[in-house]
Length: 337
Ligand code: NDP
Image (cartoon, rainbow, N blue to C red; front, side, top):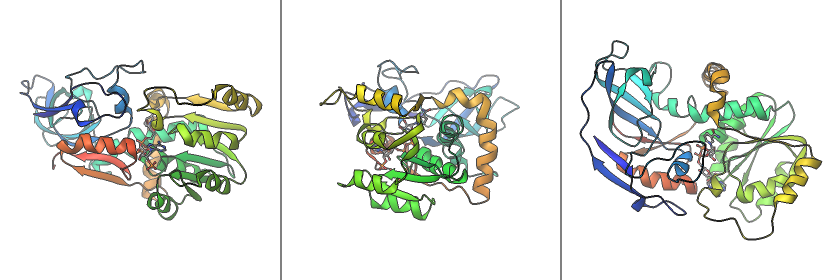
């Protein structure tokens, strides 16, 4: 098996030196176990957090340990009746080509139902993050304005389309004209705002003439600072991710913005609620799968994948994710089925 391990912990933006490629022997396939061949590896922003040993909601990857990650894999050897050879499963094999696992630790996928890569995308963790964050916290109502950044990615694109289905106005923030055009032309957002443009704040004001009722927080940083003054009374802010800040090594220069932030929370009666998607799985996952599958089938929900070929290209693709080089759900195609 070929695998990419965490060679060292990054300071600031991760680099190639933080990773190392190794080959390793696989253990025997035991009773109740299967040998998996990884087909797709999902690359996600949270992996930056796992590279660091700062306090977090999950344990970091150990130095010299295999980088973690959701995967779609094929069973190529089996000692489990439940998973015959040829089964396709959702596993958490990480950045490697093969893994021996207990059959009970993976979930079998139906390859006839949807393209298998969607199990780590629109019909998997990122799609669910959007669905749960909007259902439980965002709660968009007809005629309200929903704003989301990283809007062409798997979470943001699902947030905007969810808003539209609920009758709200969807405003997406993305980096560059190509992504902005995609939001409107392909995903049906009502407006798109380029956060890299010099007149970003003016664009945002023009796109949200009635203020903002739901700000689905994916990025933090300068985008959040521009959004905050536009939040309406009783606005909801599901705090999902802060990707603009993941590589920061210290607090930004400038005035302390915390008092101003809390003044807004108080005077506008805001609901600011952080969440990790896993807390909602028990209650909402089944509905998510059913509803989003229906919306995809009837054409109300679209998704885009950015497929990178070859495990060896995972580190570079991951750096691109943190900089906005990806366009759509980033997956690495590790092997053919
Ligand atoms: P994306 O595929 O959307 O990739 C991240 C995108 O973030 C980039 O493509 C880029 O898009 C944008 N971005 C990067 N840096 C900045 C910046 N400085 N300012 C503004 N935008 C920036 O990722 P996902 O859809 O997978 O994830 C979106 C967010 O959701 C992340 O913050 C992630 O951590 C979070 N998340 C949280 C979960 C939870 O349980 N709480 C679960 C899953 C994801 P662009 O070119 O448009 O700027």
